[in-house]
Length: 275
Image 1 (cartoon, rainbow, N blue to C red):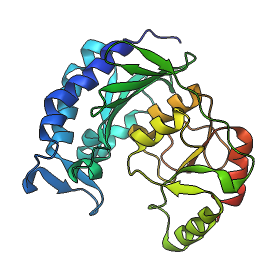
Image 2: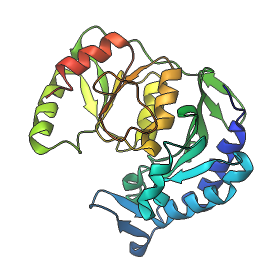
Image 3: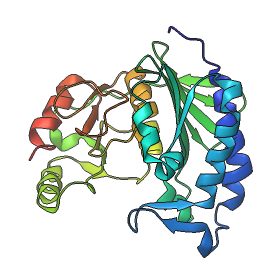
Image 4: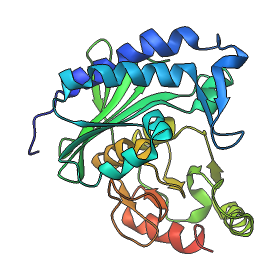
């Protein structure tokens, strides 16, 4: 790595935001605390906004001089996202990934942050407020499950079976056009299980811990995928956009397929995630 990042400080900041702003509101939101952004399944809550404000206010102490890009900040000022491509150093934050689950009172949500330097992701964190633990990766240093008691376990993807019929994974199909979605969902009958947690944070965590063989996403926003992709790669995964190119911080489209290995990636791309 070319920069020293206080990864522990960043992890603790996410934990603090969850303890102060997210968990006290969990299953305590009033109707006025939840609002629709673009559609009925795209929500924002008071907890999202309050957690992001806390992280933004203190990020300079942890990553000095970094551009801060948060999901809710971009919702308020879309032009902010344009600054990412030219930033020398940036921190990208999703204050609550899985807001739909959080607003519904389902305990499947997370807090995500990634650090970008010189156009590449050099660190990623996914914090689980319910379990009070982190999955963390720094480029070139592996992916790790870090617990509040200080114990750590290195993560590794599970080898994929040779046949489609035995593959298990998560796939987000909601952003396909209707005809394409019908095709993809029909193709997914070829695998053993294709599900969706509606929470990329936990999908990346489960995949990197060896519980899935693949993940697929059609829409790419940096706060949803930068941390998870680095963690997955550091756990041994093969991560590419649909055209075979590497996923970069500035990419907002082009689809994303994450697989245990290159062979299973190509098998899934050719037989399942194709139109």
